[in-house]
Image (tube, rainbow, N blue to C red; front, side, top):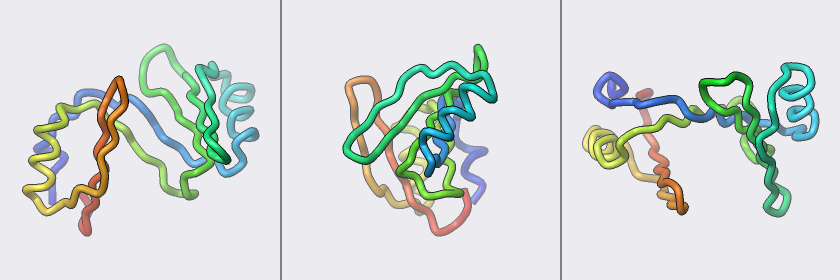
Length: 113
């Protein structure tokens, strides 16, 4: 499935990175790498922080709820076009989340896309 060649990716906005030791990860990305902490939020035991490493490019989102080794790349796209192309190619819509600023869809595929 060579779907990425058919999808118009507008920009890579976020790198969503597992951070099982959340405080150590925030320190590493801000103190060691010199990133700027933009925000950090907590919901129950879940923590997420946004760190800007460069003037341009994606924000790094550090999250203690992601399983190690499961980094997520979050691209800006025209959602309706991408959803149609991916579901037409056999991906299943897993869930859809809408906030006041954006909508995200999670798709599952048994094959690499």
